Length: 293
Image (cartoon, rainbow, N blue to C red; front, side):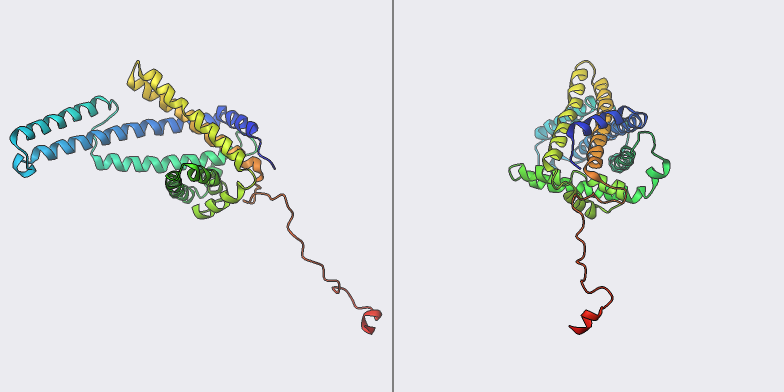
């Protein structure tokens, strides 16, 4: 089956506007806000740690003259105040706890993405069940998380060579999460099968991805526009818009994947029928003529 870009985007928007889509968007927005809190807390903790470490050392230990040492302390204090003023959502956490929290949130975001793919892949909106979402969810999440790191690493390396290889790799592995979420494959199998599934549809897949990238910029526009009035309000608005766009992107990509022709068994349907084994002309009872030859 061919890939209709318009249909994929329309179905993605329709699924996002539904009850399940809005729930996914809300969870994505919540994760984005928590990520902001932990990231800003990490920045504050790192700045305070650097300042404390520098203050605990003497000018002689640092090889600085007293005047140079005082200037350095002043610069550290100024930088610390700037970081604090630009981090209104920061809370009092150690750098280790904030970093661990960011890792947990990243894995949690992947778990939500896996669940969202399964919900958006159903034939009818609202037919998703708890069993569909939770079945093998932990293993799928870990494979999705590791696979995402591997793919983005490859894309980053490929982008160093005139950008084109990175774009090609992004297209080839566009359906990695769908392969993992819907068919419980590990990330290596998911990468291989995403490569295979996109064959014959790579231009359309590229265009779908390009539209999603362009649409995702609206989050930055919203943050900048509202941030002029209030930085915290801009951050919250960006999280809400980002949640909706994240749900839309997942839904549109999943509906594109379903369009290509993925059957319930877990493999993309091929246009060509499998070759039949040649029929043995002697696979029958012998006649009198056969015995005389």
